[in-house]
Image (cartoon, rainbow over the protein chains, first blue to last red):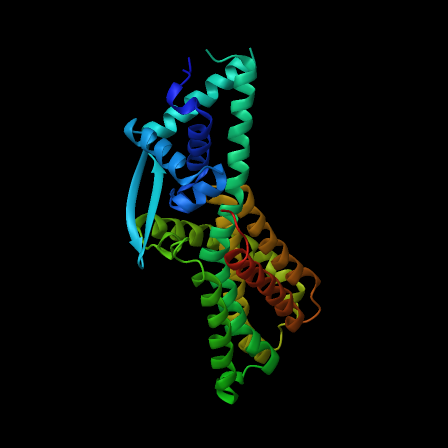
Length: 98
Length: 213
């Protein structure tokens, strides 16, 4: 039986996880902060806070680096994150499909 | 407590995020795979087809010019926003990417072998009875077909993404059209070069102008 996940269910975090889990291995399974910002439409601060919450839960990994002189934040889902997301989506579908 | 409305809304959110991801996937595919492939085809083969087999010897400057001009266009396209879209993501040399490349090559080769009987009966091969024509075109045709097969293989079989598959299908279609409908080897190559040109242009557009962010 799939379980709802309160951490993932928050709309912005759900969007983040959906985007990250949609990345195939071919894409090297990581998104940078700018790409996520474009997908979610969130502000820097808001997005950062939610990424932190997901990182704390162990659902995403974050890597900070520099590209030239500019800081770059890249993130990708952990196995636990993918599993939790899949279970949450399955639970949502189960609820809708009775 | 999550009710049905909340669940429906959440699933809609998931769908929207997945759709937004599509543009990023297309862009990455175009930049990391198809664009360099199309670049090589255009830079290497186009001068050859318009000038004939002795083009390398006769006009090396043309090849150099094609390489430099297309290379400059390529670099311009991918470097403009490299800070926001680090190239390391696209070109990172990892065990994973090598494995994927090897898988794609394998799939491409298998496809090529499967198509060999078709190729042998095709217009392209029939028109290549003349040894000199075979000598002048077979290597380059083989290279092009391999590149296109590889693209098709990647698009269709490696972590099937819908949009990657579209690129792959486009390649496959172009190749089949080239084989079946071209009246001469020249025409066959032109089909494929036209497809490469479209992909290169699409790559430039996606890399430089499309804004997923």
